[in-house]
Image 1 (cartoon, one colour):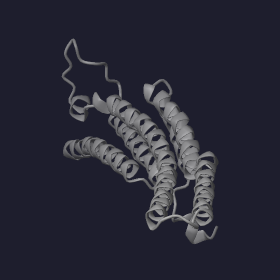
Image 2 (cartoon, rainbow, N blue to C red):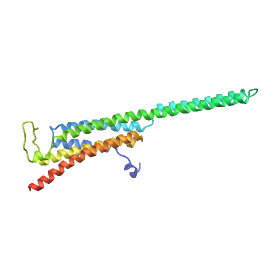
Image 3 (cartoon, rainbow, N blue to C red):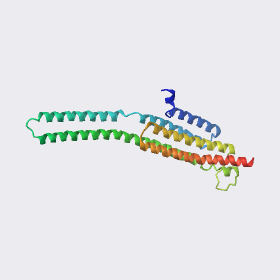
Length: 238
């Protein structure tokens, strides 16, 4: 593939490599944090999504063979029908000929409908499989959001804890890095979802991918608002 072609499609390998580097960065900075385990789970999900999307992009030989068999059977049925009409043509009325032609047309419609059903059955099977993979990505996006939910910058910078408040030990810099890692994970989840849209040109799948990208973008926007607040509070104190 040409260099220009390399930049026309998402590379699953590069997304995985970026995720692995992100996991190493999280482990180095927060070795005991649950976010590192979430990132490790995301890597496993990414490996599955990459394989799944690649398999969905390939045509299914089984369904194609079934459609080909139906086409051959339909052609054979038409040949037999026309031969029967030709053999019986002597001594039969025009009405009988019309009825024979009508039967041949009905056979053509029947086999054409069967071929269309088999081909759309392959499409529906791929759609269900892609939607199942996208559901996994949507779920892990919400898990990432849960991990940043309690990272309130105003509380960390001006602590006034209560007895029910969670323990917060991060500095401003650590909190910024933690939130940034969450934002990166959400962005990569959106790219993993886009793998399905890149491999499966199905309108339902593309709509589901757009929904996940909207979700991760919205969650990421909340995180960057927190990072902006940290920066503003630090500037105000300095």
